[in-house]
Image 1 (spheres, rainbow, N blue to C red):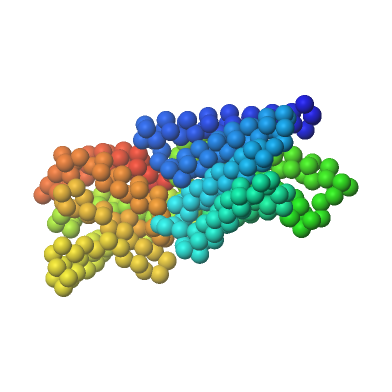
Image 2 (cartoon, rainbow, N blue to C red):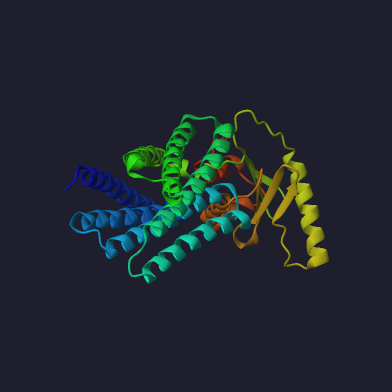
Length: 374
């Protein structure tokens, strides 16, 4: 067994253990309802299986580098490309309600090309080296695009919060970016036919450095996610205020999110009057079943959600909506019991006692926000 194979098996074995351990923790926390990250969970699931199949390729290569091992190698590229795609979707969920068509379409197109190359290789009696190199190139491109977008989203979070945790994620993503740059460069040289015996050792060394960098980046990322459990939801867009109005339009609860360098002063009672007037106009013109869901004003959006049994309204003021913000709002609404909702709509509301209960639910549903007076 060559030293190169031994090094590859050691690195990949560590990757398998890390990926499946992190995936198990994500599943456990999802069952416990402490974390809801479907895209990230799927991403690490594919990473784990991809690396497992890569180990299988190394074992087959040790005995004989046959057609089966090369086809499995192509399957590994597909699986790892899917992993990068789901990581990309996770960061889209942090920053948008749904991915823009052009970005999602680009990622799906690259995945389709990778799968098509594998099908073309399988149809041949002996998969050719050019197709394998091109498949590695499309995989590296998928990872490069996914990590670049993740870095962009995380940098927005860093500019917003400027905390230590975000800097750890930035460091991990920069390391991963360098790993994919090395892999893309290596694949491009092979596809272009520039690989030779003279530079082959340099290309192999580049691949090993890329694998080690990827391992270090993933480790930092996982430690960040596991140590700071709520950090995985950290939004790159400002969320400003939470307002709860009773069915009569009375403001019974309000909380402001603490954001360094941003101080949005709101006339919260005026928002109540505005909401009541607009909602009444909509019901009169479009029917009683019509519901006001959002107001979009320049750099701010106000999201309205009905309280249980349509008794009251939650208003959330943010820069824009995201998948995770919507999920947290739905979780907060569903956590309000009928008894608590009755307290919200009583003629005389004990706002102090009510605030204590709502503060607890707010923290459970939005653990990634620092809320004042909560």
